[in-house]
Image 1 (tube, helix red, strand yellow):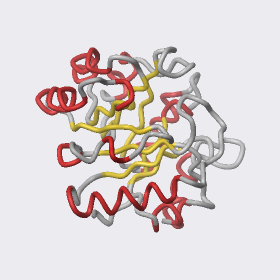
Image 2 (cartoon, one colour; image 1 turned 120 degrees about the vertical axis):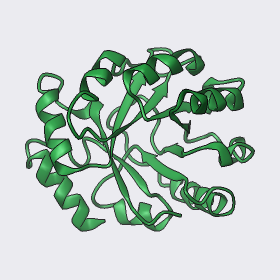
Image 3 (tube, helix red, strand yellow; image 1 turned 90 degrees about the horizontal axis):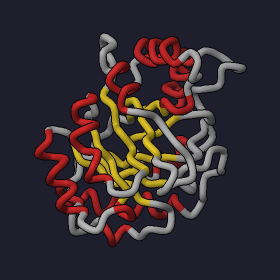
Image 4 (cartoon, rainbow, N blue to C red; image 1 turned 45 degrees about the horizontal axis):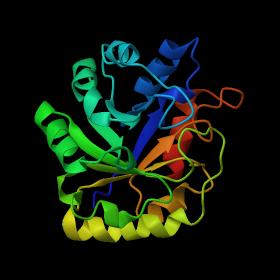
Length: 223
């Protein structure tokens, strides 16, 4: 497994009125990834970010790689759109696809890196047969689309099991944790096998405490 721990800044937690300012701070802080949530109001009961926003942020100099988290029905339909908008990783929910292997191949053929997201109650067995084709697995550690929920403690065991599977079948896999990441649980997440952390309101987007730049710097001292 890769030893580098990546910070994936959750752009949906940025100030929607000052998203350009927040993005510049994220670039200056050298976060490894921008986590870009897309929601359709059907797969989850919210709406997320749009491809026009992605295209704009990718025009910024030194913008990090972007992992697009597709919380949508029929994720295959949007592959070309988000490729054209500049996505680097295209991560879809296996619960939303009847033909995940076909979707993965289409993502890879587009030039993006393929990822799969799993809801908390979705077993790891659902991806064992395709894990060798993935660049990323995103484990939802809260219920997707719901802001403010706490980390589900039972997910630590799931992280460890995924790490064991990845060591055997895909040692370069990014194991991304999405939901409930805090300064208090980061080390425990890493020790259980996580190497990519989606950081939002519980970590770096807390303007009432400090700047985004300083919050990222603080997280790196923990990591």
